[in-house]
Image (cartoon, rainbow, N blue to C red; front, side, top):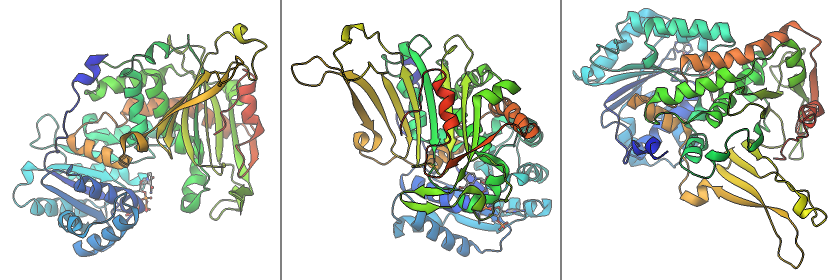
Length: 510
Ligand SMILES: NC(=O)c1ccc[n+]([C@@H]2O[C@H](COP(=O)([O-])OP(=O)(O)OC[C@H]3O[C@@H](n4cnc5c(N)ncnc54)[C@H](OP(=O)(O)O)[C@@H]3O)[C@@H](O)[C@H]2O)c1
């Protein structure tokens, strides 16, 4: 598959001049993720030579107030320490315009300010609008930008104008379709960059390199050799400051519909025609999602387990149950844990169960993709060994330690012929000796370049919701579907284990 990689960049090309407007500039996402990411891009010389960052939210701040608060955030959250000289160079490009984005007149004023800041060169600047506000503002902001003449036709415009949209993108299939339709009234699909920050993570991007730049794995990457796959997302934290959002959302919507389905689709795609053309990869990802078997009511009951945590202990510390957390409704039925068995019903994957689990207040924070290869016949070793011949297990750890390990069987030293599992390990930190950039760094840079490969296309979002909306509807309509309980600090309810034992499988110990 040499041709897939031959078009790759040999050096980083800086994006063209860009005015980045951040709606929601006084908010948590901007301060914890976006500004530190931009500062790191600046320090690595990846930002455009000419760039402007214009914060826009209702709070009245001066440019200097914005820079001061940004400095504090970067000092707290950046992966590299704040360097005063670098900060001076970076922050002189930062401005702030008080803006109520639901008011057309405010957006017009914002447009004038951007133009003035570009000092007569505004035609040379691409405009990139980042929607870091609550989702209810996504459609109105896009409409107001259009009305204010701040969106150019991608075919005819002088400059590129694009929109980055945060998650959540809808809460079910219908709302996602509606939001797509509203955004497309004002921006073409090629101008819309829907963020799923998992796609900016090095390990997630490495799935493609791992699969298509190594000769040894791809021939095994199918139902002939793969027994089953597990995708696990575990957090030890509870809901924290996101209580009211999470209580309305639940973990299926919060994590599975976006992050875990993105991982699933990259893991299962056919080789795309090219890695440089955003649509080749996204076309293949959509095909995977379209191939996922939709579940009927009986299958939802049998193949999806939902649960909520009770009080327990994490790292020896007592923690409250979900219903006792601040900001949670006392009768809430929001799921804090979900496990499901799905099938990608296509030629390559037919018959390979894919188990997905996601949970809060589990013993540790970890996201891992685990591929279990079929066991070899064991007759040669019968009677000689301590363990049964085990699966070869390929584990791709997405967080917190980014890396890949392979479990193989080997003979321990000594006169007896025995078989024991050993692990071959690769971690990013020790192999490459540099810390991985934050996901938002890569995504912001790609959006400035106009490269949508790592962003979710409209049909991908709709397919992902199409898989989960039947589950959400069954849960809503049928109170008889249990919401199981699990103790905080455990690995989830026993019923989730039963999903796997029926097929002779077990969750990997993480
Ligand atoms: N925080 C995260 O880690 C995170 C992670 C993933 C996704 N997200 C998504 O990112 C978005 C922002 O989340 P957040 O946590 O940053 O929320 P947040 O802290 O509540 O910030 C919301 C921002 O929106 C601004 N805003 C509210 N009404 C506005 C209006 N009419 N016009 C202009 N600005 C307005 C607020 O500032 P003013 O009050 O000054 O207007 C504030 O800056 C949400 O969609 C969220 O789901 C966040």
